[in-house]
Amino acid sequence: MKIRTSVPTVHPVVLMPPWAVTLDLSVPLSQVPDPGTPWTLGRYGEDRGIYTQPLFGGARTVHLGLDLGGPVGTAVHAPLAGQVVHAGHNPEDGDYGHVIVLQCEWQGAPLWVLLGHLSAHSLQQSPRDSRVKPGTVIGWLGNMDENGGWPPHVHVQVSREDPGTHDMPGAATRADALSARARWPDPEALLGRLR
Image (cartoon, rainbow, N blue to C red; front, side, top):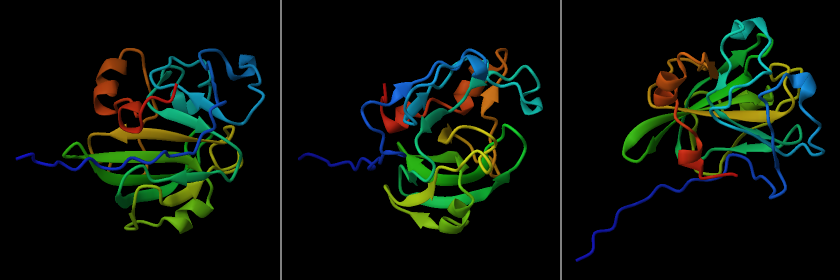
């Protein structure tokens, strides 16, 4: 007798076209070449040269999420079934802007998924305590005036513990990178390899 186990359906957070460009953000933002498309990927674990805002203290440079870029207003989807447990606005220059954190279950354990740099309207679409299914549109990519001052993208970060708020450190120091990666693992383990 074969025992069936259910595998949760994982939906893409952003429906990315196959021509999306993987960016090299290890250099200062002024040196990042124009990718020629708004559809971009920013890597997890990359030691970045673009974090010059006071928020990063000149030392937090190792990226702890996956960045999925597209045009302003591009839909952002829930990857798994879950609940919006935290939502809010982080207004500091270089921060996330509007953020939604989902609590989901993955591989038999709770998992929290932060989706940052969203439009302000996203928080009305998906207020706290909202229940979502895989693929539910929970928000949209925000413009630079509302997303912390960045080109339009969503920062996807996963956590093995409840952040307790609508924030997670999106970058770590080089010295703390190993322990940070244990707390905030690569989102591609959940979403699948994007490039």
